Length: 284
Image (cartoon, rainbow, N blue to C red; front, side):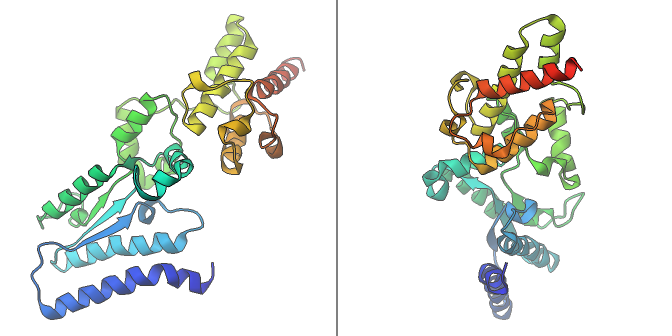
């Protein structure tokens, strides 16, 4: 990233906010609220957008700074806003963010969050963080994760494994919705069970990877057709990279990246490749 690109994104937030703060300080205004709209990226980060993330993180910290001075301030770290604007016009981007566990708010819900922030005028300190009321973060609500998983989607989000998200992780565990960990070197439990029970191993493998593709493209498994080319499900480089990594973790089968992006590869062909690999390993 060039120096110009960095400052183009960060300067309006930093200089604009600071100038407004200074002007109000000189005027001596007793404000009822000082509200800044930030982004969830200030808390969880986004690859290739460090300037945007830093600008939003500045707003979050500036709210704490004003609170520490005894002044009104709040920053709202917004996640996705659905049904309007950019995401409404780009549903593929919304699907990508949903797969990463970022929950969406619609316009009405966003206005409710703003209303809550404006109504929270208390300057009393929180028990665990005296400046906690300076920051309202949306998009990582445990109930949102729970609802998405009820719909059959396996949410993968690096934020959950971050030590800073310990409270969020504990909430998910209490709800008993966290998926069981997969042991290294073992087959997925449903595939292993099919092998032990003498069921059709090919069908078990196919169903397992159908569920994963459904999670990736946000489709119920009933709508996944095993003989349909992956490209028709919107398979792109980002989804392919995640799918390939998952394949190796689950089956220890290395699927070539370009094969996943091919025009003819299907879930049935991938299941056949996986079955052949597992069978050959068992016969060694």
